[in-house]
Image (cartoon, rainbow over all chains, first blue to last red; front, side, top):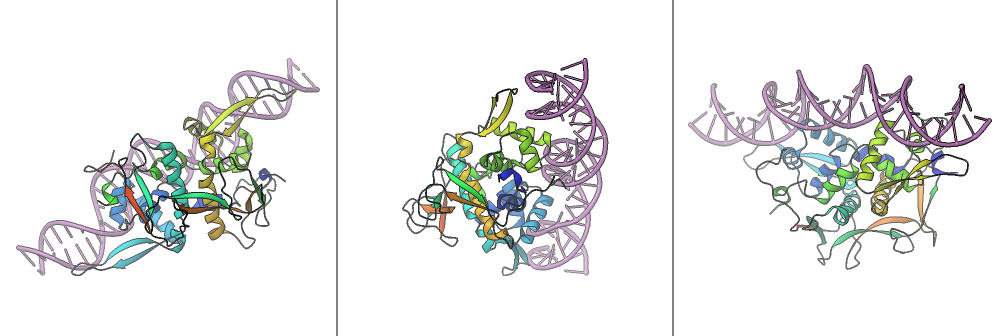
Length: 160
Length: 160
DNA sequence: ACCCTGAGTTTGGTTTTACAACTCAGGAGA
DNA sequence: TCTCCTGAGTTGTAAAACCAAACTCAGGGT
């Protein structure tokens, strides 16, 4: 029973992309990882339209990946900052994988713009594909994709 | 010098997302990984509009991630299929990272729809963050992001 | 000659995005 | 108390992107 017989939407990639796939979302998550927390700072640094940023942040909060908290500095009024939740921080491997690919394929003459290192030892951090037996999975390593009970067969046409 | 002082677009995440960030692209890449190669099969299985699919495939070919080749079966006319290139296959860690996150956070009661296993040993395959010293990087492991010569400082406003 | 199929292309309508200006509220300073 | 500034959106408009369905075109089979 081949992959084509299954409902394309009942798939973890499709589900995740429904959360992350809107324009700018990935860059917003990146900047949140990098410590940008204020609405206007996100707006300025990323270059996203204000109304779109509002809607992206709302969607991320609805999805449970971002939370908005208010805080007040001495002598200043209440302000808000946006932070990643635990589920939001779990997006880190996705971000690093995206960055790794960009480093390898899209860097300019000066090389990649940013390096991620392990605080404890200073070594560079990257994504690796590994099997649960500990084998490294390279680009050419053969993998098998098997559907599980969570998959859903297509009926006739699934166009809504 | 903080991250906010740097040009947000000169970043491997931003560059990669310029290639992958259009709607449907990630799902097209997923299906190509899973052996869907024909235009109409991609159209039907993913549910993407035909003109959008045409444009996505063109963009992926322009970016060097997909190639289109013609083939001819006995007694049939020339047809085309789309396949990932080497650079396209290098996207695999991104796809697996996305799938892993979806498995962990968005699976239904029946669990994740698909399992990826290593052909050679049958064990499940996942993304891991690892430093070059071999340390496993968990969600809470502290990392340091340092800009490199490839980064570009912002001037006043970078709005084009 | 006719029909079917495969891979787009076109059309018209809808939705999303971008931009700039605007709104509103809270606080500081005069 | 009034004015001004700032922060976080909101609004209106125009352009771009997307979608669905129908269409086009070419190659091959009957």
